[in-house]
Amino acid sequence: MVDWSRFQKLWTYRFHKYTHIAGKFWSFALKYVQLRQLKRQIGTRQLVVIILSEQMGDIIACEPVAREVRRLHPNDYIIWMVRKAYVELVRYHPNLDGYVIEKCPGERVQLLRSGIFDVVYNMHISHRKCKYCPEDPINPTADKIGLTFDNYYDRGDLLYMFSQAAGLPAITADPKMYIPQSVRQTTGALSIPANPIVIHCQSSHVMRDWPAANWNKLIAWLISTYHYPIIEVGLTTTITETHPKFRSLAGQLSLLETAEVIRQARLFIGIDSGPAHMANAMDTEAIILLGKLFDFVDYLPYSGRFKRGEDITILNDYGHPCAELPYSWVQEAVQERLGQPKLV
Image (tube, rainbow, N blue to C red):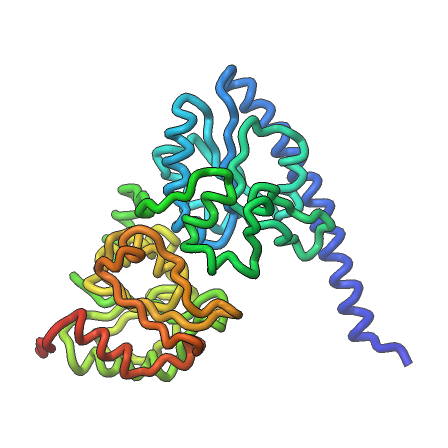
């Protein structure tokens, strides 16, 4: 008897695979032509590419690489290769001349093999493949220093590690984000109360998360104890509270709008995630909840202020996942940061 559901899944997968691969080669061809035209336009200037296409937190953390590459190439044309979802993070950087959107790691391999770039600073670790493409992305520089997915968090913070993977000296600078006036105006139209507590509850990986029940308990306590308004950011809403002092903007903001909301915060409370890196880059006081991630126990992804311990409380029950972080630790950290309650 034919298993039609299995048959359907197989051919659905094959359809997505082959259409993706065909789209990859078409996308590569278009980009190659566009980059050739760009090279003619820039004349004798070298075309320099910085490659770190994902994840959000990684790109924010490694922003100082753009400044260092500009220092090394003051007169050259510098672009950042990035996935479409994260274009905002590099679009307004004053040390970049532009960006190129990466369809997938397989397309990245094709672009690098073409020799279209004069200088390459590739921050990716080897062997993070596209689920459909046969190409295996290799970074010889990362391989030479022994940087792998099994040890990268043991080697230092994200900027420290990935700058070396790109062939640069280890960088330890403070990350920055660049918010255009148009984004500030859009965010201003949201009528966000002054000095909110901004929270972020869910990451891209469940191993980084803290239980929803704990978050809801924390928000109920904050509402009953402090006068600060509370705003949730991120992709999806975790908090079920309907109190007037709480407002969820989850799923409603762009990346830079999220960063601008975090910039205005009296305190940011969140798990290890892109918004946590935004808090670091936007000079916002923060409480970050960490925990064991795979085999990584004692790690710190952040450079700059957070690495120096400025305006930051890092909570980590070493050897235990974030989900097991005691609720009382978070409440006590909030009390230390906000001081005595000022009820209204």
